[in-house]
Length: 52
Image (cartoon, rainbow, N blue to C red; front, side):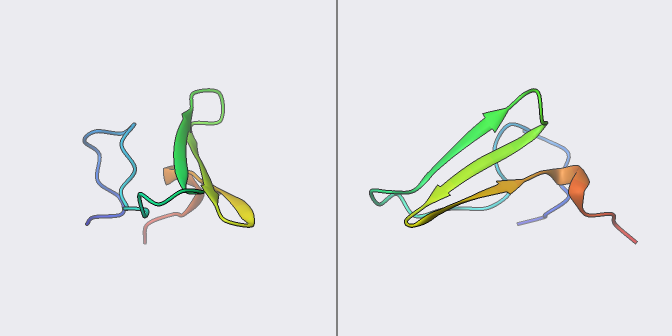
């Protein structure tokens, strides 16, 4: 998968397990994804990393 793909922006450019305790939610205000994993939470935004 292309990390910097421009199509389907509200679909994460990664896969997470479909098991209990995992989820991905888009946040319009922050322009990124909240990712819930067992025992934690992450945030991913396409604009966080700069392509060189």
